[in-house]
Image (tube, rainbow, N blue to C red):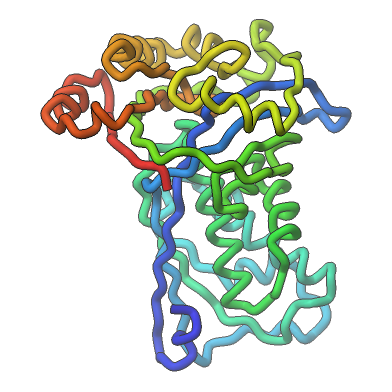
Length: 320
């Protein structure tokens, strides 16, 4: 644990970095800054990556010369392992970007301690990339939360959410740390209580560039905005089933561009009558999922059959 690190010559802590699902995803308009406003309900999963953070007691980097900049400090303080296949340049990695953004905030707010301990972060990756499960954003958020504690920066959660939104649109939900209704670009979060549930998640090997999706002429960008109370009160229309007006605006576009996604979604749709639920895509893809009801999850043989027959990697996962 963090409080025991100083007592050891070399200490390692492990933090879980969860995945998320979008139970629905609407775009309500385009902003003046070029980003899009959205509405969604995020569901956090008990499935994800792991970050192993190590520091050696006594090794410190001085920041007291008054000329420290976030980029230089980040290179001095952070060693990232296990992410070589994600980005060829460490500066493009969301973990590095998150640490740099956190340091930049501390420098700007004049709260940076005079000494900081170098940290090695080893990424134990389980979530597929480009699947709409938020793996990279979750890694970034977990990094910010732990470094904020280890370096005793004392940045508030609200401030971390604002910093995280600049790193990536999905980062705030993982700092928030609970199921939520999200608005704005994903940084305006309101907690929501949802029933425990299991999901059958398929991860086809397909990825459509996000910029391509947002530029696609068939992408619906003008969904009527719903109030928070409406979304809370209509949860029966998107938790198990997906009823009008709730949907994922990216699904028809991604399915038309990525046959593997269309195939995976079709497979789950073929199971809908047995689970009385609606298959759907999460985020901007490529993962698709089917909410399961309790009567099905007890049939282990049936679930095993569904997993084995899936056209791509398939997982049975729980909410966090």
